[in-house]
Length: 179
Image 1 (tube, rainbow, N blue to C red):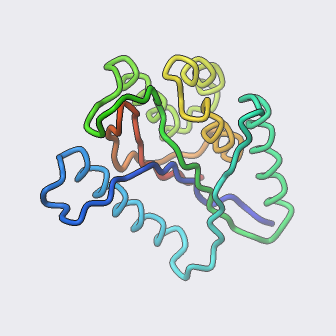
Image 2: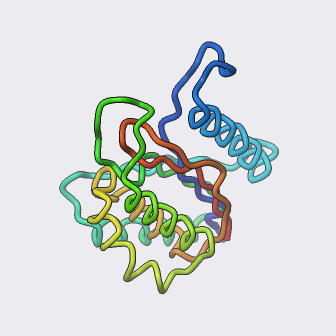
């Protein structure tokens, strides 16, 4: 029987020719992505587990994305495959000029609450929190990438926040989740 053996939330990380001259938040995101790479190696040490990026449609609402995520997970369980899924995108997403600009304090608080619920596998609490969160922080893609991930994992995976940082007013998290 197949299984979803891991899920990742990744985000834009600036590339710097010399990381030592990067601002602290950029160094933190780069460190988080390196840490995530180590976690991905642990999830698939022989590189024999497919890593599947989740893609979403802007016309789908959050409920449809959750249903698609559940359907994808059910389809995987009907195979003999073990799969890791990746949702790529920011949490809060109120774009402004300037890569060093952080989201508002309230958006950061909500981003961290979302990450806390996701990494603790609090599926029931996520059901009520997520739709409000996605609207309140103006989540990237309306939160569709996160809804797909929650559908795939059932919101019951546990995990680790590797890094959180800004980029032009957006809140960017690097998270790994396992069943």
